[in-house]
View 1 (tube, rainbow, N blue to C red):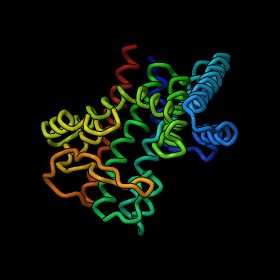
View 2 (tube, rainbow, N blue to C red; view 1 turned 90 degrees about the vertical axis):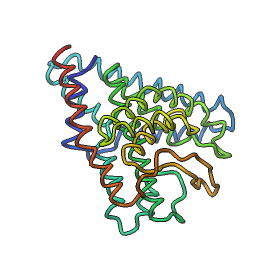
View 3 (cartoon, rainbow, N blue to C red; view 1 turned 30 degrees about the horizontal axis):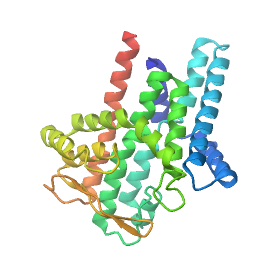
Length: 298
């Protein structure tokens, strides 16, 4: 277990956030775009080759970095690896991006940068509901999951996870172009997020004011969405706030019918999103406490 590395990386992300240089995820995106331009075909095999290629390349580069850091003094090697690993964590960026919906002059436009659904015809309530769902789901994708793989496998673990998650966000859509090409990206992402999504849901339940309601929502509604993972943190968030999330949404001009998650005790509004975002402090405290305990005991 890489507790010291994970704790330092998490602190760096908390304090410094994103670095003013080209992000490793952007480099992965460049690779995906280049592969698609040259090798795209509407076949599962083509998409599988992309998945294998990017994972293999990411793994080789990250292992090489770890190997080279072995020639540095221990403290310096830890620092370098933690700085690199922190680029795979996105608590600050996620929180700031979702919080921008609270102050944006055009919330629908701000939301369009965060979600793949159509935002032009959304009501104010739908905007804040989408913000809540984005916050909950991406706590898994952007915080818990990368931290989970960093703890298990060090820098190569978090790097490979970010490669998988980046492919999912770019090509794993059920559109005419990506239905087959993005199939393997979606499958691998579902596998990678299976445990982290459920850990994220439990973390949200632990921070809920009404834990029983949050747990009941998670237990009853967590598996209702088409995605095998997304419903768990969203259902837990809905239960913790006493609201209903999910429901029909428009994607690429087509209405997608989705079940409702949670118990509609109170309506969703701006204050609901603000309350959900206040969980950041509790999440940071729990995560850092667990990492510190792990570092001391390891």
